[in-house]
Image 1 (cartoon, rainbow, N blue to C red):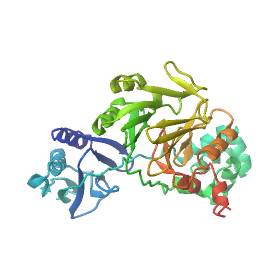
Image 2: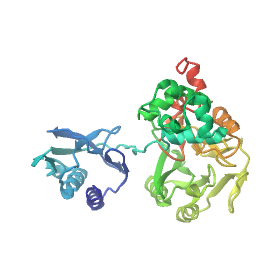
Image 3: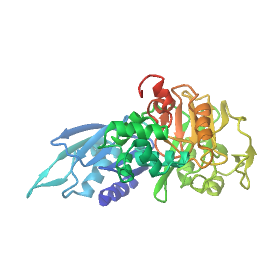
Image 4: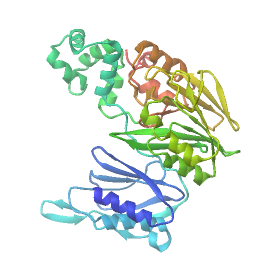
Length: 407
């Protein structure tokens, strides 16, 4: 699988339109290509569909092809099919693959791919949820100061059975309900997350927004660019683990980086700050909550509003994961947007280190109080919306109870 990915990367590097891609390995290996200037539309002759390697290109995560990865396949043919499609013209049509799969002792060809150039498009990255259901339960336990013994008593089971209930799947729903009640979580949200049924979908702003997702150690971290289309003034929110992803986007769009806003100062969010400022050039302001001052940054008290061309950036206190955790609400794009840092994740929250109840209330008051279609851009994991978090985040069951969905 790695051979296929590296060969695709090398082949794409040989064409004029560079691509960024990230790889996520779950039950299948997924390669999502982010087109800088050229998209692709699928035309697929499908002989067989097998769980395996899925290529996601074009539109809103269209599946271009799925084929088995248990047998042999030619990295070169996959790469050339991609590269040929990107080059366009006759080179982009009718690129047969020579991928094979062992079927007993018999090998068989699975696919013949056809690629056609398409209009420019934005192709979102495939980013998994940051937290598993056991992560969520652990965060609630620590926040409430409940041991496994405490949970066993609340559920009415032996302590040795607690770990099985924490998995949520394969146990009686009544036990999940009792555990959720003890942890003040939504039981049906936990079940949906355990079953892999929560995957938030987002309609992105048409202009003025870019998400970077880069690898830091054994995790990935998000950073964002927001800009005013009329003045081309841009602001970065955190740096991610590779500043050049943001710099490349700034250069490609002809933007001027005016400011960097920090959601908090944990190292994975600011590790590339010096490099970002150096590569951006000019006079760039850096802004951080007064509760987490760092050298070279201007401090502010949450509640202040900043300007970016015709856009307005409203800061709100969402501390708890960190002392100076801040959410930035962006006003003036064609869709409401909030950069929330590690206060809130899709389906979860950041690990709360101080005053658990107060931190959750700040999320309610300063994030989930926004209109339902507000896009939420977290420090880790996929984008989500206020509406989807109200419906599916187990830390806020009161929104579902209001609809009698968790009663």
